[in-house]
Image (tube, rainbow, N blue to C red; front, side, top):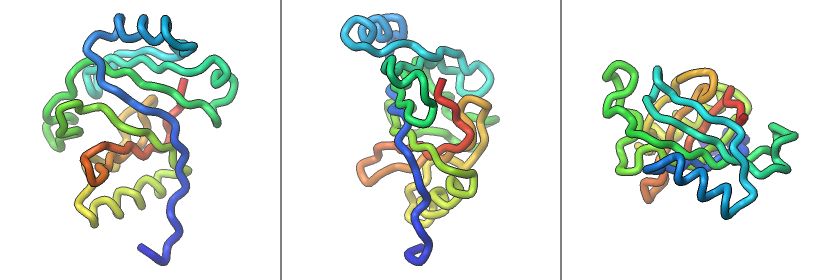
Length: 153
């Protein structure tokens, strides 16, 4: 893998698991300039509710947008028909999110991670909001999501 160039990525979001969405959104709106730009229930894929928060200045350009993704609810132990567990950690959805230029770039990251036994999930297309992703764990178990076809807001 040394001879290949590293796939280009851009940090787009941080996702954190929350216990009470209403209280957490109210907290961020009270203490910060963050505004809610997206909210949904992922009833068909993960069963979780998510809200995306962003700075007001970030709302004009999707290329430079950075969001905090708040996620409420538990990820099913065996997502997608019991085939493959998605996240195996206590705070199952917390991660750093990186946007990739193509599905092939996501696949390259997944191949690298699989070879080093750090691939947690994917690569797999989940839905139009989440897109094509893989999840990789760092040496401390923190999760990184590499995605393509994910639109932030």
